[in-house]
Image 1: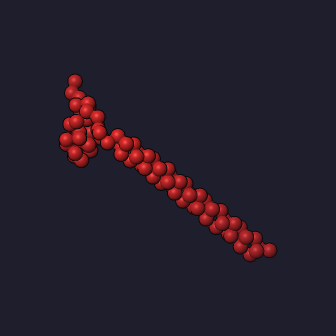
Image 2: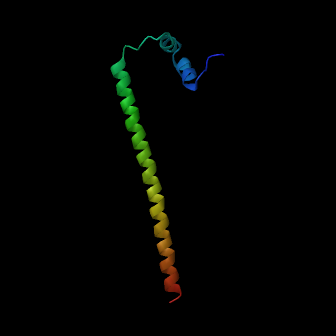
Image 3: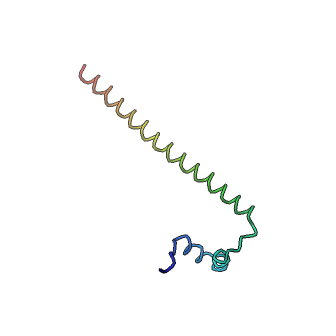
Length: 80
């Protein structure tokens, strides 16, 4: 059975063939603290992106509610 090639392997190979080869050989990177820092930054960024998306959804919901209330009020005044 041929080995499974993952998309992340292809990306790693295209980014840096030497780093990909080292990883396949089981050699750990010597800059573990930098890698951990980068991971933390990516997690923080992901949380911010998710929060921005949720705020955007909340904004659309509030806009829809305000528009609905306006239509109801104008309709009520029109038929009074």
